[in-house]
Image 1 (cartoon, rainbow, N blue to C red):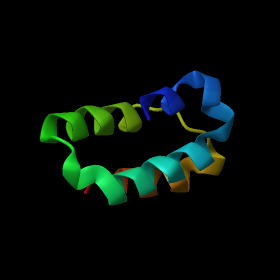
Image 2 (cartoon, helix red, strand yellow):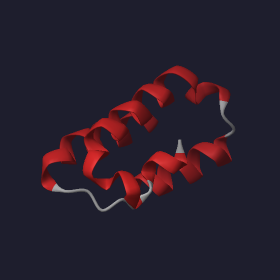
Image 3 (cartoon, rainbow, N blue to C red):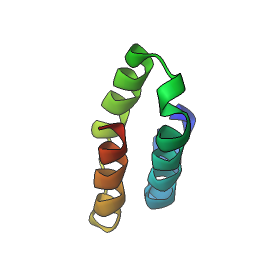
Amino acid sequence: MCYLLTTRFQEDYDKVLRLVQAFIWKVGSALQPKQLNDFLLVVSQLKVRSYCYEAWEDCIGAFM
C-alpha cells in the first residue's frame, strides 16, 4: 500500500487514496496501532493537488 503513495502515482492520487480508504475500512482493525500511525503519517504528508483534496480528506477520515 505504501508503494502506491509514492510520487510515481501522484497523477492518480485520487484513485490511490480511495483504495487506501477502502483498505483501512476493511483491514485497518487487523493492523497494529503503530502501523496505523505510520500509515496515517505518510498519507497526511502527501502533497495533493486540488482535484484530489476531497479524496485525501476522506482517506484521512477513514483512520479516525
